[in-house]
Length: 344
Image 1 (cartoon, rainbow, N blue to C red):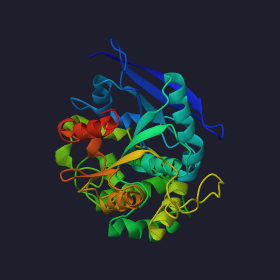
Image 2 (image 1 turned 90 degrees about the horizontal axis):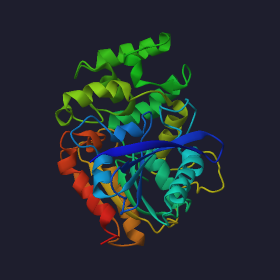
Image 3 (image 1 turned 180 degrees about the horizontal axis):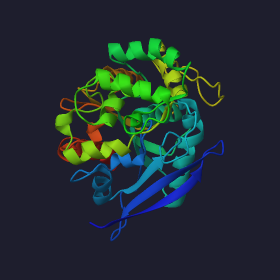
């Protein structure tokens, strides 16, 4: 099937320029309506389009969906900024959702959200800021960030040291280190990670997790994807890590900017959303442990029993859920099933 795409700018609530990439089948109308894909930190919407035989974007478009990929303020295709989850939850995702609904003419849309796109988007949902969204497929982490022990140590005790010398971390420093601090971090990465010869792959593991590698298993990636990853990761501000450190200590998402539209504690009250959630977690995830999604599923299940669902994926980790060589056979059918439930 031939696909075509267009990039549609939108302005976040605080004036920051963001964009949406709309992908549709050229020869058919998307009868199943719009679905919004929301990427994680320090990457872009291209993370859903790895060089595999069949990526998630094509899978959704060929199934009949109108696919929208959101580049929110964490995207590496946008100018770097000192963002946090609060800003994305209030200013980015609600305006992206309204843009999709307005341009598509749909009263309801669906979403597939990943990592910090997932944490910030569920903040929007729980606060009642995206009532247009009816079904949400959430991968890796949502309301309860649970880290491996070494990651917890890093974010609690090493982050305050890093904040004295820099305002960001960047896995791409393995390819190009612009200053002395970047060179020192890259040296630490090279000394501590020997799992492959891809410097960005090793930098990603140092930055985001506790494994070797942390966000995927090498066995799940084809060689083209492993090489492609070198260009798909860039800088992440320490403002984000600082908020996540507080969330990890508290055991749940907390807001930090005092924005009136967000609760301080996102688990202290019933969620202000009617959306049905399908929580996905790779059992081999060494960035956020599967317990993260189990806890959030249990939280939602208390308010609306047997309405939401949980999928634990035994052979997957963090990002290989979307870019694994067998994701189209093992994972995407489950996501399609969840997206289609309300239509059935």
